[in-house]
Amino acid sequence: MIRFTIALLCAVLSTAVLAKTKDCEELKKEIETKIQASGVSSYTLEIVSKKEARRNPSMIVGSCKGGTKKIIYQKNDR
Image 1 (cartoon, rainbow, N blue to C red):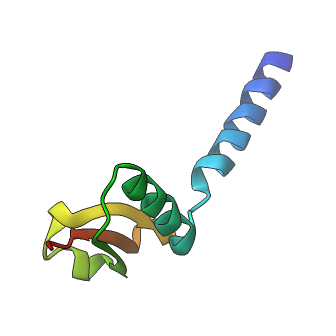
Image 2: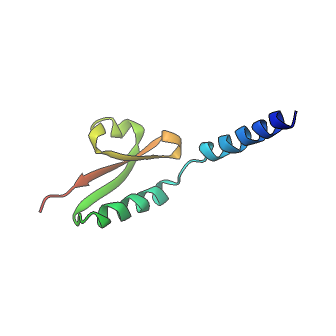
Image 3: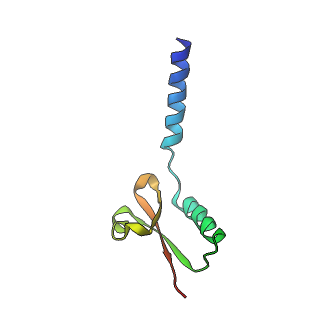
């Protein structure tokens, strides 16, 4: 009975952690940090709706608000 209770408690706690969604601005800042660390100086990150992001799925670098918003990346040429 104790093992069952512990397993149930672990399942509930892990579900709560997985269900948490990231804030779009927070995720965008994390992605910006990684891009800048790799040496890219001229780029654009934009938060768009899932529908808008379908036009060019190769530009998607992140997902937020439970998958309803996408962050797209475009490297600007000099």
